[in-house]
Length: 101
Image (cartoon, rainbow, N blue to C red; front, side, top):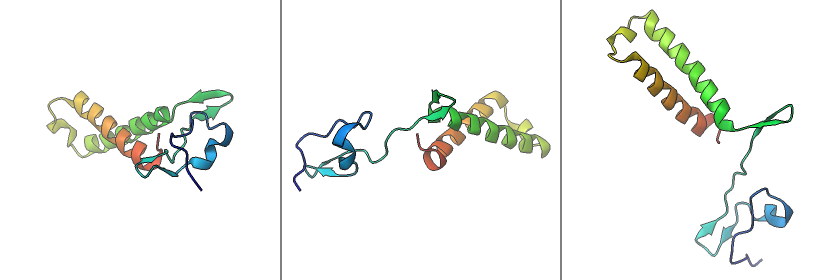
């Protein structure tokens, strides 16, 4: 089978373009293998990043509660920056390994 010289229109994935997902084009260019997804709740579409950040805030809250319980949170000079840093780290990890956005 001969592949087209230009990549198909994969935005929206309408038409015959779904056949080319993961196919190599001209030996150097590949079509993305993951189709963008949204979360749909009662007809309202949300970005997967929203769920990722919500889960990261919940994980950060539990982490900070554990740090407070064992007295480790008082060693930080700026607790708010530590909280924001934990949110960013958890967002990256959840977004990379659990909910790819």
